[in-house]
Length: 371
Ligand code: FES
Ligand code: FE
Image (cartoon, rainbow, N blue to C red; front, side, top):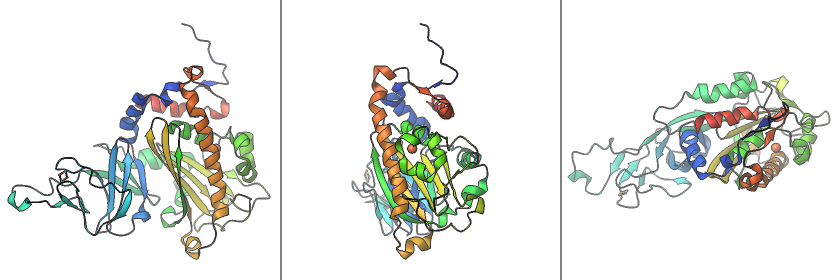
């Protein structure tokens, strides 16, 4: 079979089956989500000892809990006795332990087996040995990442350096002091699309002029299909009449403490592989965490973070939130529009990337290299 070579302006995408084949999704669960660092929770959401959340990471349920010593820990949410799921709630608080609902093995917040019926009759059991299986953790930007791999890759090389490479300097993201910000709003989106369609969409702005009227008002350079993700260190500048990163360009909440002058009228974005998007604007930060649930379904949790005093004051942040909420809805609708096309015979060999999307080919190569 001969194939016509593509014009130099175009590059090939992944073929359609990468977005529809459950075997490829299973390989991604194993090689991507269960092998790399995966952002699970915002640390401050588990503020008190005993606070916990359960999060799906690849095929595993992970239980995250704050210990009595204040440390956040993560465990596989599976009882060491006969494998029952310990915790079925998404979030909550316990006093000092988790009890398996099946035969009542009980684990401390540090994962240690602390009690079980007739345990005293089994003096040879080392309680540490039969504790919950721990999962590696790393806290950064006020969020907790976990890695299920037995020998996790270096967090700084695979996560921090990638953000630094995109933003040009480690100081840019650090200057927003994200771990001190407070949650102003969280919206969870149930997107009927493969997670890679969402990543690709976030990586290009060829679509901005078509589907993001409010965003291109605030960031006029986006109207030219400018790829915010492809130029190292570049932040998109607000339009001359724009006072803030809000749905109508009205003023936001000033500039976050620490944010440099050069950044105070700019929007920066970074894709943190595999499942985080970071958006930095002068007065707030928007962070997306994706939770791929099936080959054609992805939950996206989006946090809007503001200065702690802004959130504490109870001031209305809805004009700030509304801008990116609309962007999210516009983007996710576009991804959902593409998902059925991925199984069409018209897309069996994939589609094409125009020059402002060429950098997406590197993402495709990265996926091909892993699965
Ligand atoms: Fe958990 Fe038996 S399976 S106590
Ligand atoms: Fe978009």
